[in-house]
Length: 47
Image (cartoon, rainbow, N blue to C red):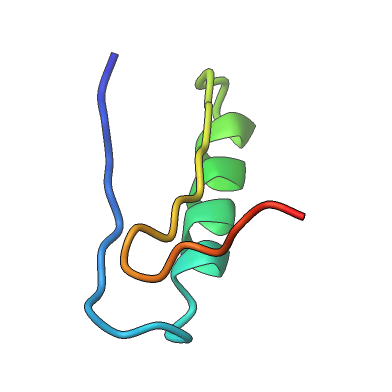
């Protein structure tokens, strides 16, 4: 199992889209993919 992380100090730079596109690309080639999206810099409370 390999772990790939996407990190940026600033929000709103397209990190989630980059993760989704990368996961889709890897899945197309038969890779098993699990993605998690965390905002550890500015977490929001669950509603």
